[in-house]
Length: 252
Image 1 (tube, rainbow, N blue to C red):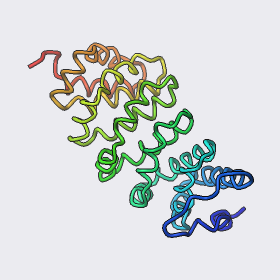
Image 2 (image 1 turned 120 degrees about the horizontal axis):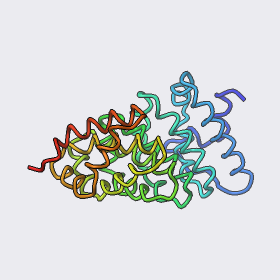
Image 3 (image 1 turned 180 degrees about the vertical axis):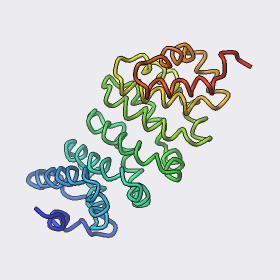
């Protein structure tokens, strides 16, 4: 099925503003098929911009409001893939994507949570989006996801907060949200990717003076010393930079 045909399967895909499609019976089956195909196509770099140019966001964003969890997951997955593109990061935010993804974070389905957090992590690379995500209340639900029992969810939530923390106001807000002890706890995991994201987040969050105190108090300094000797260079490098931010272990 070609991309143009795929995007025109639903008459609502070019509506302005887009409406939410029916979510029962055969419609749900079709929604799943379209969202899945778009998610798969969006993996390809040359397709990411094309999907958006053909109106793909007007189709996918309403699907995040579906009553079907699988449709929501597939739509969020497609948006996560599309948001790898720097151009799409701006367009997705301007078309209301940030709000819709934030509403998916408290979803009880961990697979929906993971894809929504992953999409927000990608969007949070953009300077303007860092502010937008915070202003729309994205930080608290991301912090809540760090307490998930699913490491794949934790990875994406910590990655999103690490990206958002590259902003002075966000760094303070994340510190005040209670995220730091949770991130330090993630830094004790045996999962290499979670360790990598946790060490990166601690690096980005260890500039603010109040955050430094929190990191010391919850054992983060000692943890970072251990991580700085990791055999995984990504982890070790981030931990070493965080230690530089913290100083030599002496509180002022």
